[in-house]
Length: 230
Image (cartoon, rainbow, N blue to C red; front, side, top):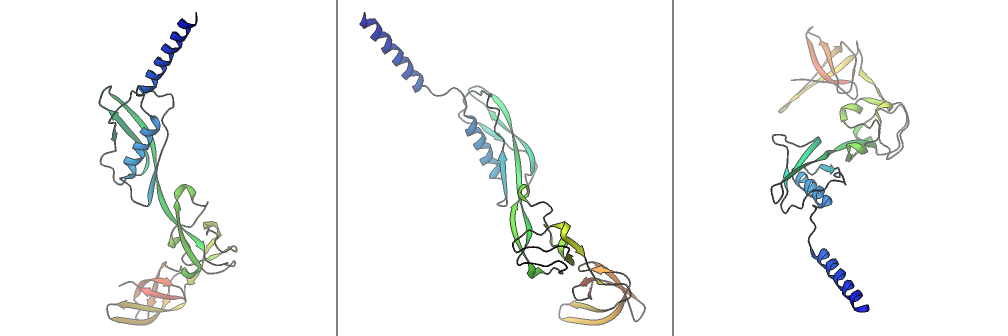
């Protein structure tokens, strides 16, 4: 009675081994996702990265030896939200789409040292770091124009990110003020004076009337002088 039982055990073992030896008939979804990520990353600058959403785990695709990633045509550089297609030509044709998000690196400003409320910001007060947009601190200052010519409404600790709500414009030139005018070019510099016709923070344009009665335009500079525009 034991012989048929042992024979049955042997048959089951052979069936199990045969099943293990056969290649999977389903395409590996993790490998598919990795292939899409690799293809997209090859098109991105070093300052960007891609995140590919995993496909539906219930998706059952026949195994494909050479799936083809279908990148968007005519869109350079790749950015934002994308749908990336993957196509299998044989042995069983199929096409599937995965969602991808391009994340771009952004610069933002931090206080190099502790800064007090009322301090007029200068370049030496700040340092710049890089991060991806989704990781930016809320209200982070990302452009020099956002802090140039502005003072702080609150104290900022060393290493803390600068936030837009802490900044206030400061007029370095006021209407009626006598201001120094500077015009510089290749190998020359001309200094003169005039009367400001408006208020301006650092970097802002302001009109100035000179002694001849002519009106000229320039950009207000820290220290209350105006750089004329050639």
